[in-house]
Length: 224
Image (cartoon, rainbow, N blue to C red; front, side, top):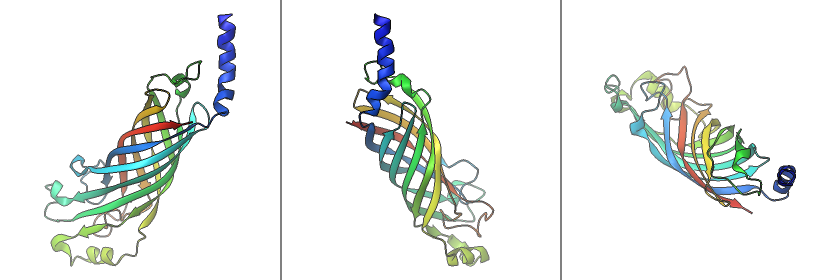
């Protein structure tokens, strides 16, 4: 009889979940960093981590997939002073960063977070995400003593948009604290279609676009 009850619960669970709104909304707190013409390698410089905060709203389509809307606010910065071989050039920048995006999430072990009685289980569950967004920037760049450089002049006269399309993607880990609260950790890259996150292109490396990274913790409340 017990096995019959378990089977019935498993069959009824998707219907029960579909009958109730599966929404989570909450806060994000973390950091923003960047890689571009003012970094010394393909990895961001950790000394340039800046605060990033945001809001998100997640809608579950089933156990394993969901769609999430994000609003993020932060800043990114960089400086040649962080690298001995770049110190003489003397460039630096800082820009406010505002991102609005929609991503899809795939949580392969998502079903394990639900018990037969529809309650969330306190189990770690990894996920990957990817989507599309808009990033608003306003770089303030200091070219130091190289203001007369031909590349600097081109960059100062460049007509780039302050609103850029970006592709966010990355991975995360979430855990249900109880039936209402879900906590998570996430690290994601953003690939914008511009070389002007830092206001530098011709005066640096015009051969590739800049990108930035967002990482941190989220705390979401399940909206019934």
